[in-house]
Structures are given as C-alpha cells and as structure tokens.
Length: 248
Image: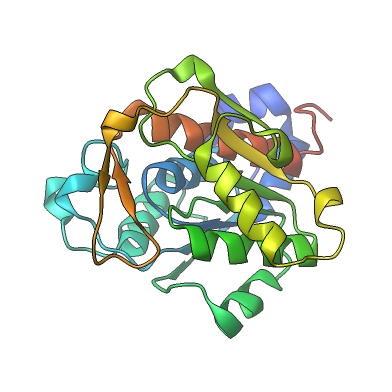
C-alpha cells in the first residue's frame, strides 16, 4: 500500500511506515448521514485499509443539503451501497463490509465484539446510540461519538474532547442521563471522545416529529456542520491509529 501514487501527499506528511499502519487498520463507522458519510470518506482518503459501514437507510431528497453521499441521481439507494461504491473508487484496495442493518440485541453484540481499531458513532437516534456506546465501553474499543450537529451554525464552536465534559450539548446531556440509568459498573471512569459544539441550540430550528422510532424532533441543519463533525471524528480516529502522533 505504501508508495501508491494517490497517497504520495499522505506519505510525505506521515511517512511510509505510518501509511502502512493505516492500511492495516479496521474502523467501524455506524451511521452514514452527514457526519458518518464524511468520516468514512476521510478515512478512505487517508488510506485506512478496512471499513465496516452500518446504516439501514436509503438516500432521501432531504439528505442532499448536507450529506456527502446524497445526490439526485442516487435517491432511494441504500447508503451503504452508495458509500461502498464511492470509497472503492477513491481507494480500489480498500476492504468494505457494508451492512444495511439496524444495530440491536445480538447483532450489536456480535459486531462490537470484533477487534476494531476504532469505532466512529455517527448515529442520530438516541436509543441505538446509547446501546452502541454501552457496548463499546464494555469491550474497551476506542470510541469517537458524534453529538448533536443540528440547529448549529458556528464552525468555530465545534470541538472534540471528553464525553463527560461535552458542555452545552443537549444530546450529550440526554445520553449521559440514559447511560446512568443502565447502571454500568464504573461508568464515570469509562471515558471516550465526543465531537460536539459549544454553540447553544437554536430552538426555532427544531420541529416536532410524529411516527418515527426513537426521534421526537427534527432539527434544521446547514451543509458544513455535519461534515465538519465527520472530518474531526475521522482525524481523531486516524490520530488514535497512528499512536497519537503523525510521525514515527
């Protein structure tokens, strides 16, 4: 993998040994919306060798304003299929496991038990997100979880840090409350990284939703914020894979 022409700029920055390290890495990305789609693409362009992609949804017209996978030409197509084709076109050597499934129960347990280098949680509904986080904490796989990117506008307010210190984020507060209800042993000591915004949510950008599982509100979203979340999540995952430093 090291030395491929399309990776020359990456190798110039991090060195051939680190390019090979990325080629051997396996990352799980759950959710291929605005955040997860951008994260998966950045991982592929960096040369990560294997991605497991999980999302049961299909491209919808309302995705087009912000989701890198969404085009008018692929409306109705499974997001995992769109992603697999696109990422293979970026890096023909990448190994993609595309799973058009909802994660729950034994399916979640079996998937998270695999030896991933990192998990990127880009789920946008609360219950599946909470149980993914719980399972990742139990098995000890490094986790980067995206908090709420909706109803936010300021790119300078987006940051990454301890989940337990992700202030000003309503979604993070809700997840902390739900995790505590599960009575996970030693929960407060089991930290993980969260990508979140310190910008206060704009209530006028929210509307009530009826008839959707695990979702009570829908938030307005601008094009760049979810993609910025995804880029930061991918960059944090790459930093973790490379041992916290870009050079050997």
